[in-house]
Length: 267
Ligand code: FPP
Ligand code: MG
Image (cartoon, rainbow, N blue to C red; front, side, top):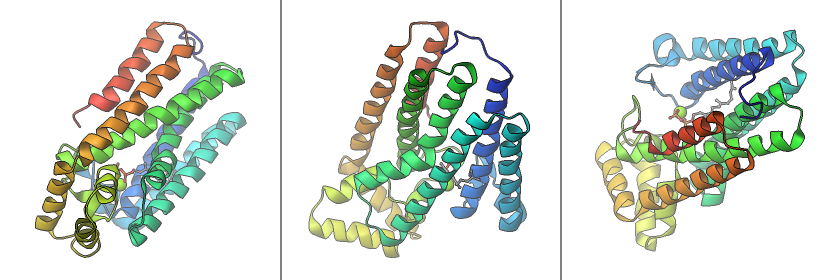
């Protein structure tokens, strides 16, 4: 969209780096989350244990970094290194909040911005940087990536309540004490006694399947899902608006289709 379809070797290398870092981050994330499923199949840690998964993730991460270094793509490397730092911070903040259970909406948005949206923003920034040195265009693309990334993670978090998440059972976030937008909203919009019941459920009964189901039902009844959907659509619309800056083209239409896919996808 930025260069009207013209790409170059830097664009391909940038895309490859992103793919390597993305895969590394998911392999590490499954260790962090002790999750045994990824995209419907066994995760690396489930197949070969944590030790191997940590090292394979490190290997892919260094391969990605070296791809930029070997070709002197230092501007791209700077973007990607910042993204890795932010993603790690997001994951750490999420762990801290899962221990203390004191997360509010603002912190939720900070977490998902860092752990997820940063990478999608880096994709857009790198794509733009590979074909144009225009700072303003780059910033437009950076913001676009953040907006779409936030919508993407809200959708991912909604799947945990709707049973449609790819290759993962419902309630896995609650099992991990991961409080996401539907639950955060419900906790902040119910009676004191109900809030106490919810917090106790997450703290002590997070592995009790029946209790987790009751929590999910409660969140649905109290409008937690509708609230999260509303927020997701707000970000979707902001992302669409962000594209207005660019003239119409088949490339822009593809990005619009991608935005719609992110929020409408069924898995
Ligand atoms: C998935 O989130 C995980 C992320 C969005 C980020 C993971 C980032 C790291 C482990 C730190 C950076 C590490 C490297 C090697 C770059 P989720 O658990 O909410 O979603 P899921 O359902 O896909 O597991
Ligand atoms: Mg995970």
